[in-house]
Length: 494
Image (cartoon, rainbow, N blue to C red):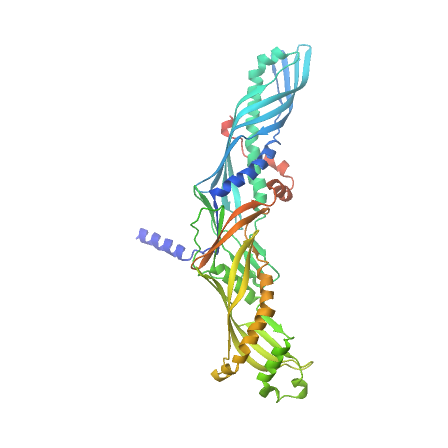
């Protein structure tokens, strides 16, 4: 009985699980590019390592090693790879650091001081970034594991007390190696938990698209990491800004990502586009009034409705014509392997608009429009180019009136193509931003249609350097916070 109850609850939870409207897959092919940019950033961070002074007494010898600075860093061998279930692993081997520090030595009454160069060889670093969603639905680095080890150091001792330094070199080098080990992991922890998270903060989660609608890119669950891919599922839903708490039910086909040949893949379901269309519909965007009609269309409309016009007053007869288009239901998007279409049903109202008088309605008809949509990904924006594929007008009053409207079919279609479609395309080509960090864009995009969803494969490009973006978005006083926020040094350092 308990087993039956458990299975029932599991089925109930899965039935009510929210489906994603957008998915993104980052493949292992992107890691080499990410590693190149990341290693440049990491080198600059490691060069900021500060090592505490090393001072002490051995018999009559008093020594002080201070002002230790990293002068050179070489990360010769590195590897970045995914590790199930939620980690990104960076492995650095055989790295080296050049150091310069000040030495002070007092032996009985003899003093020796100056600056000296040193090198740390065989530096190995193993760090893992755990990726999870935070309460707002944003992806975050939630933990950084780190192990660092310096296998050997060499110090070029010289000066008056060279033999004394040689005698104490093992002790001093061991102490410096220990201190260096202690400082590497806090720098990496700060880079992951503070700086990389400041980069992830630039990914849009719930933001305005324009003055009418916004979009919600909240993660629905933690990212899933396999050996080859990082998969993320986003809500991918638009909403009218005037109804910020409104949420649409996603009953569309769940998008699937199977490909791994490109650096990144993005998938959008029909729900993604339907939520946009319904949000604009609720915001009143699908309503258009045309008060200056082309001369030939004006003449044709007056001839068509001459029987109604002749019964009006002279002031009304000579008044300008007005044509109003208004969607009577939210448009719907259909994605098939053959292409993407958007279906719109709208009312067309033709009226006379005499100045300072009430409008006189001449006719009201129904317009069915089907638009073909060509999707493209440019930079980091999803754009659409619309074309009029089908147009039909008819009367919802009688079949006889529908026959009378046939002569208006061609001129109204031409009006739609010339006067309305450019305005629609101007808006759709501006596009909507994809959830990517600042400074990263898509290149070499390929769009593929499937039954109920479409996928876009692309490669990544750093339009801005990682350092530039992080410095722009670096939280205030992160240097001061580094020491307090850093975890204990790696156990390998001990």
